[in-house]
Image (cartoon, rainbow, N blue to C red):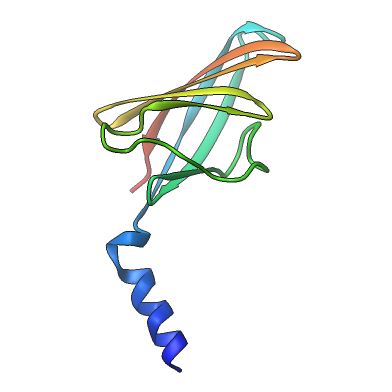
Length: 110
């Protein structure tokens, strides 16, 4: 019972706050150029986890949240770059094999 109470309290505490971001992207260069794609991710405790997109099966990673969601991370799917401006998250994916660049505009879900 104590474990259940502790777990329930922990889920309501700010340390477990999460935000879902989603939106569309455009393939701006490479295979599929001009195509539109969707991306959804969740941010919890400065950790980012892809819910959809090319990195959805990869483990979560840490971004420096002291300046918003900004930073670069290399994953199996390619190199992701994150730039948060207010209530918008710009995300770019650069891939080498096949060569492709995708730019996304994500917005928080209420």
